[in-house]
Image (cartoon, rainbow, N blue to C red):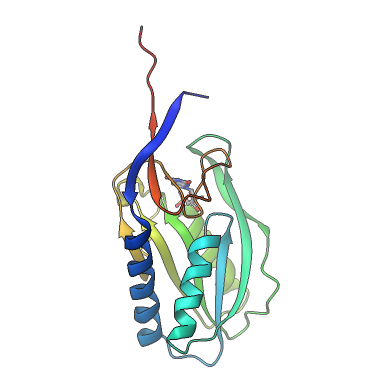
Length: 183
Ligand code: XMP
């Protein structure tokens, strides 16, 4: 693995908290359903989703909550295969209004696959909510219905996002800087 460091704070805890509050307001104002299901894509969405649904409850929105695991990344920073659902959600989403929550929209493959999967399971509507969007990396056309922050093409960690399994616990979003070997 290339040497790297994780120092530069891209998004502070305060900015995260303010924006997640705003997203919950946007969702509460835009989604009126008596059968709302929020599904987080693990593992990266777990902190974002936990904060988002707590703000939702303050807006009197009380969804059922579940998770699914989608895998496409190895131990590095590049995707190496098409994302697959490796653990499905267990809530029945038939006729439900689903919001899929992910940490970051990168190439677009994961979200596109997740939406198709949930529609195929009978969801009435499927909306998408991502904390971060890296439009420069898009391969599959895909736009989130709710988006926290648009960021440049940098590898980032924290607030649920990891590099090689680490740094998910950071309360902020930080940039990973890879150190090129000097010759
Ligand atoms: P795609 O390419 O399918 O990817 O849109 C979405 C998934 O890619 C992971 N990802 C990242 N994870 N820092 C991370 O920790 C990043 O900068 C990053 N970019 C993409 C992430 O798991 C996301 O769900």
